[in-house]
Image (cartoon, rainbow, N blue to C red; front, side):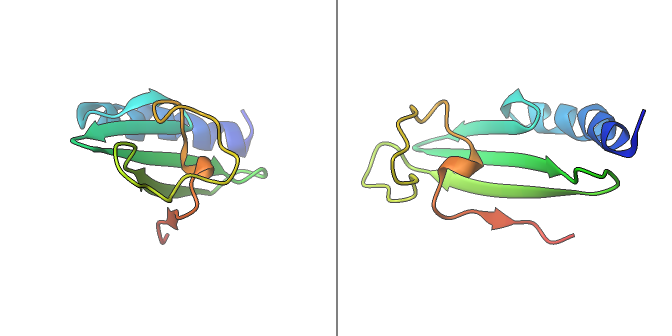
Length: 93
């Protein structure tokens, strides 16, 4: 296994089960959780050379006048990922 595969494997083994315990659904690298009128989004990006990754988070409120949808996004709220939003936050390492 190369470094990138090792990193992905570790995220899947240690992090994904914790997300699922907290109500997130989806598959690596994109997860979502519905909380009332909000859908919380989490996405992972692994470095193409391996050894590191970033986590980005965002939220959408599909029932109201949400402006966090990226321009031209035609996905349903249940299909959206962090990368489909205008405002997303990268967690510091």
